[in-house]
Length: 306
Image (cartoon, rainbow, N blue to C red):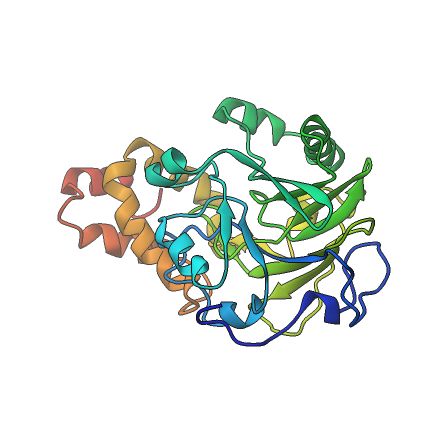
């Protein structure tokens, strides 16, 4: 593979799945997959991690589970191996036009459904999010897999790394490399490798880009709820004292998105690239004040705080 270096191999690590431990003996017919999702490049991620060629060394197929960003992401991944990708709900117009919503892949004796897992309509998505429990989310994934005759689902969207066997279907989320929206920070950025072999459960290793070598607990806590499960992996971009006014800021952004979003994203990049821990209102206001496309009347209307 062009640009790839020998690195971790899925069959050299203990699994995150409930299957037996991986061994050095590669099963007959086995396929090693590199799993990645939610890159959002370059809107919330300036570039793919430099360690990715090592993490995906020797994979036979790379699956991208959506919210790709610019399609050049797939060109870069294609230098590491063959790529299959689907689009997400927060993708570029080009990605939504050129990439399918779902893909079925036969690999290592398994039928894999590759799907971002979002709802087609925003209203349905927001209604579904009102229930914080894990079960309906896992039920929905398993139901879509069964309708496609798949025993494995590789999905994204939640920005939470996960592997679990639910209703006879293996559900695998590699995690995310970028924030899920303009108001959050992805504190753990991860990808995954999966070894699929005939007659065996998937053997999955999640790889933490933010802390190489750290094991990730990727089994969902059904009692704790979805938001509790998200806390180890993403957080608000705002400091605690500003979170109470975040709703007002969101309202202003939605009402004047074409004008205000560029300045907000410039300020947010300093948090996403690690230059500062939180985004302050002063950071945002400063960017808007220096932006010639933000009218002075609008800036005065928003005021020093939303």
